[in-house]
Image 1 (tube, one colour):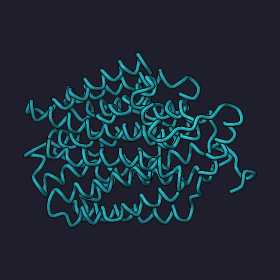
Image 2 (cartoon, one colour; image 1 turned 120 degrees about the horizontal axis):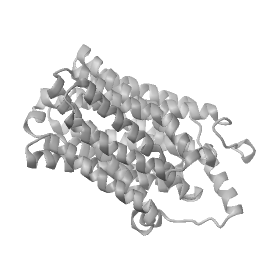
Image 3 (cartoon, one colour; image 1 turned 180 degrees about the horizontal axis):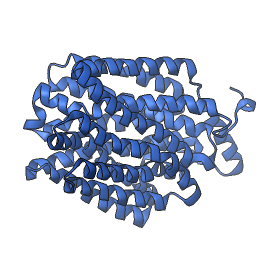
Image 4 (spheres, one colour; image 1 turned 60 degrees about the vertical axis):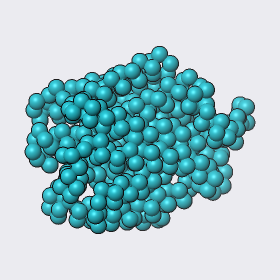
Length: 408
């Protein structure tokens, strides 16, 4: 790739943008396969949902720790070996996941599969975002991240819904096996054939920036310190990213159990959870663009507040319509904050260490899965009431919203 061939912008790179959007859609499908059916799978195969919600949270805790760590590693590797090799590696690592689900003899097999899923998600989703940010213009960052998260979380929602229907048709284990292998093999082939390495765009952008301003070169550790405690603005944004993942952990672990208890029907449960994901995914087509026009902070704070409201409303509702409305409110709140917290991080980082900054933000953000799952599991265990998990997450989100409003 020569400098003359490099051009920035969504339109000028529309084919590669489209290819990366397809990739993040498949990444979303992959995690979506676990969103609806894993908790019924745990109950039917191992009896975990009835006996211990805290033990059930172990697969989300494992996912969060591994995905968060791999986000950091992915950003580090992407600066050195490029975006495409890291993305390919993520899909190769995913290959055993459906087999582990199918042949699972104990809950530990599911936890191991979830560890691999965390590695897959950390490597692949990070690269879809980083690569599109490499090739698009600065004034398109919010829209770019919005498009990325729209495709990814639409995939999550549709993957959850599809897995519910496929599992009812083929059975839980066979459904996970067939659907998972189809996703991974298709994504691997498309990555190999269609994706172009985007690191040259980032290098060109860094050279241009250094000619216009003094470009600061930072080690990974210095970027980590800056984002984790030294810079109050970056810290406020990063902690909000971490805490909002408590909500996603709640949806992943508690929503299927809670709604399945209320409705007694797996597909109804799948539809309600999918409303959350679909509203979240589709709305990001506009919310990312809004932040390019109106700024990040107001949308981020509004999104945190709206998501908090949606979480608190869920246990107060008593019908499928009420639960669906609560899920939609939560999803739209996530759409307001999710792409725009990331865009704010990109705004405050330089091209030379942008991939590292994104990786560190995503490290702390996805550690929120583990922290949130532990909190909601402990809350439900201590109070012996599933609704305590909703209140624990709602209170955490409220405190985080105040922090972001004051310092973001």
